[in-house]
Image 1 (spheres, rainbow over the protein chains, first blue to last red):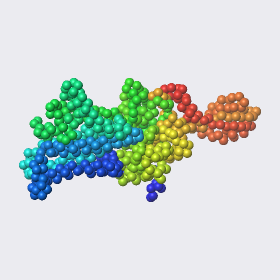
Image 2 (image 1 turned 90 degrees about the vertical axis):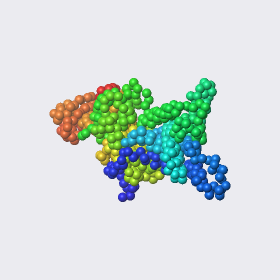
Image 3 (image 1 turned 180 degrees about the vertical axis):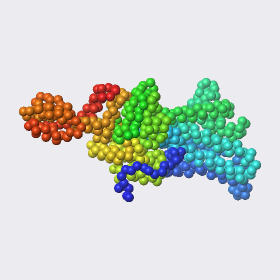
Image 4 (image 1 turned 60 degrees about the vertical axis):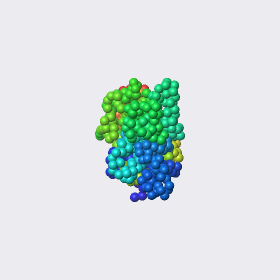
Amino acid sequence: MAVYKKSYRPYEGAYTAAWRRWLAIPRYALEDLRRSRFLNIFYIASFGYPLIAAIVIYLEHNVVALEALRAERVAAIVSIDAGFFMSFLGWQSMLALFLAAFIGPGLVSPDLANGALPLYLARPFSRAEYVAGKASVLVLLMSLMTWVPGLLLFAYEAYLEGRLWSLSHTRIAAGLFFGAWIWIVWLTLLALALSAWVKWKPAAGALLFGVFFVAAGFGEAINRVEDTRWGLLLSAPNVVGTLWEWLFEGAHPTANGGVFFRVDQSAAIPVWMCSAALAAACLMCLYMLGRKIRGAEVAK
Amino acid sequence: MSPVIELDALEVRFGDRPILKKLKASLTGRSIGLLGPNGAGKSTLLSTLMGFHKPFSGAARVLGHDVAREARTVRALIGYMPENDAFLASMSGVRFVRLMAELSGLPPKEALERAHEAFFYVGLGEVRYRALGTYSLGMKQAAKLAQAIVHGPKLLFLDEPTNGLDPPARTRMVQLIQEIRGRGDLSLIVSSHLLRDVEECCDQVLILKDGNIAAYCDLEEERRANRRFLELETRGESNGCFVEALDRLGCQTAAGAQGRIKVVMPEGLEVRCLYALAAEQNVQIRRLTHKRDSLEDIFLKAMEAGSGGL
């Protein structure tokens, strides 16, 4: 029967499993994002660094190619170690920040601005699933930019160096994975929280950078005025860099954090303090989301 | 008939402020109107039934499921058309409704098929690929109805469905609601401040005032009762005998001045019997009017009576 001849009828077909209904949200969001030419170009360009890193790893192990390119001295300068992978993670994480600033504000704010939340939440669909659906868009895209190519590079290096190297450098693999996840989770929650509270998308994007750069400046000002080091807790690059250092190299780091995530060695903050600060920031973001993601506004 | 909604001393508070005060009712109608002045608690009641607000005390059940403990089950059974604009402006109509269907648990293919059907059903078939932000107010209302029915709910919550519609669009919306009601396979709760909409779409009405139930009545019964209440204007020499004859037929009567008689007919007595009796008594019935106790009268009485009913 042609669709225009059909009348309303109750639905009697099969239902999808409740646990995977939220996956519709990232699927629709990714379909929308795919239409953005700028985003496509940016995303493809973000794989430039991993590609260069893979080439460097290849050249490092190919004497013939190094001689042909007359780049023996370059190989001597670059060493494939924790610093190399931390710099890779730092660079990719900075690109992830740009990605979050571009995509994040458009995830929740349109639903709030258009009053669509009651429609989502009037279905067999919880607030947590809504947040998980929105967050998964950023988590997926940022994972593909950070730890996935990072672990592929690690696997490539391990393949070229041999089993002994991979066994003695497992901490790097763990650092890549967990270090990226720390950044992804915090950035995702922050982007969603700002998207929920700031309906104007450019302002929400700018605020994301503000939290990263301005808060670090504010923390530095506190350090100078109060002659303390605890202001560094407001600096996301320092906090995340400290955690990365510990994840990659343990208690005796040789590298100075990753690029963009340098650690102030003269005023080091304990790892547990950085972990607590980041956890508090994440809880704050969750609280902000909880206040806004509701089926109905409550005017007390 | 099993109740659609049961309210068991339901109390909802925002902070310290009670919004719904120990509501107790069992709503069994196929189509129930929710009436009340602004701030009476209509939207809060709907939100509570959908699990958006937790009851402070008491309980509410929708189609037998407790809204606090089985919110997910309840929400799987209902379709909700909110009062305010609710859509994603950049999405095409059919894509938005498809997303809503998928979130309700329909597989993607079925969701798309149902989204098309729902759009044709509400009269938006030709504009289903346009962005929702470009729709007129009437089209947006219809699109909201489409997303509310796309997953085939058992109970439909319509919050001010004719809000802001021009007369033709309002008529079309009322017709759609009547058509859905007429199908008999889903129940309706229509919250509106427009008495005419409720009168045309509902067979029962729950009137709220200050968070209390001011009245709950069956409009059909009211209409039936009204049909038995007549006002006659008569001419003739033997009016008194006519009134006595009416009494003998089992009517309750009250004779007024200038041949006016108020009559409540017993069950089974037809109006034509009154004409036959009048002819026998040589009395002319010059005017016969049915009492029209409109929903407006019921509403006003409820507002005057305060809490506790009519």
